[in-house]
Amino acid sequence: MICTFFGHRDAPLSIEKELEKIILSLISEGVDEFLVGNNGSFDLLVQGVLRKLFLKSEKIRYSVVISYLNERVDERFKEKVIYPEGLEMSPKKIAIIKRNEWMLKRASVAVVYVKYTQGSSYKLLRKAERSRIRIINLATEPKL
Figure 1 (cartoon, rainbow, N blue to C red):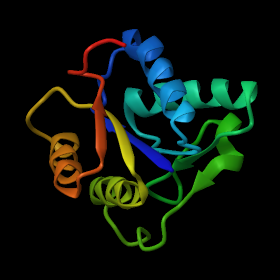
Figure 2 (cartoon, rainbow, N blue to C red):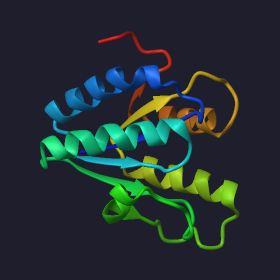
Figure 3 (cartoon, rainbow, N blue to C red):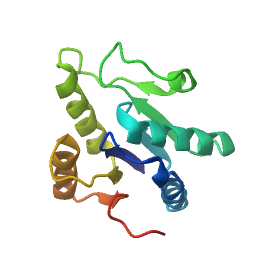
Figure 4 (cartoon, one colour):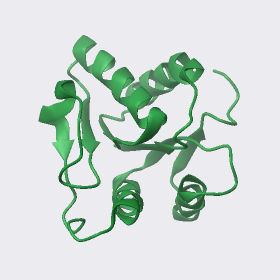
C-alpha cells in the first residue's frame, strides 16, 4: 500500500511526534511505500521522519517526488528522488499541483496538514475526499 503526504507550507514542527506515530501505525497496517513532495515545511518534516524510520528499519520505502528538474533536494535524499513524467513543460506552481495529483492517484492513504479552506492543499484535500482514499488530517485529527 502507498501513502502520500501534502499540506500547507506553514505546518508547525510541533506535529512531528504525532506524524511519526501515524506513520508507524500505517506501517503496522501494511503501508510499505511513502511518497512525499519537496516544498514547504510539511514536506521537509515528513522527509525527516521517513528518513529516521527508514534508517531503523529498511522494510519501508519512501521517495521524494520533485516538481521540476532543477529542484534542490537534500543530499541525504538524492537516491530517493522521483520526477514524474510530463512535468517538464509545466510552470513552477502548476508543476507542484500536478506532482501532488500524481502522488494522490497512486495512494490508498493520504496524511495531510490542511487547516485553511483555501489554496492548493485544500483543493487537493477535496480531490482526495472525492477519490475516497483514507485521509488523516494532522490539523484536525484527534491525538492518538
